[in-house]
Image 1 (spheres, rainbow, N blue to C red):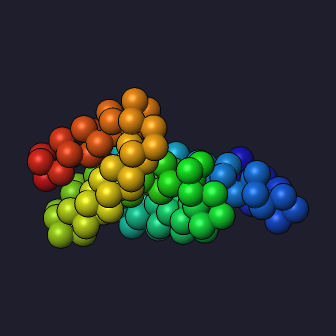
Image 2: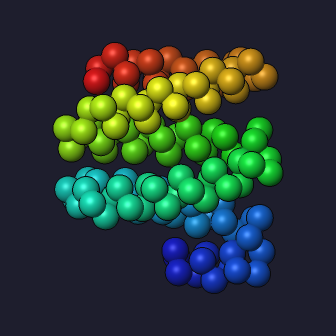
Length: 122
């Protein structure tokens, strides 16, 4: 699926890059579950780069993807005992969710709470 979406993104990047990012994020989740931490980190980082690029053009739509991927990356970093990196990723995700809450409080308040909980657990 990832290979197909990469191909489609060459023709229609605005729509299909999102799907590439989602597939990379899902792949990273699987890789993390399989203890393939280096592969998972690489997949998260690539998804994060895609979402950051898309968020430059349309922040309201793509900043939630950036925050979610940062949160997932922080979970992985915590599992690798990279606590300083995990804290930095959680803090960035939290800042984004707090920014989004100012616009759509009901939608993103649970994400603020989740990220605060993850940060406290760390």
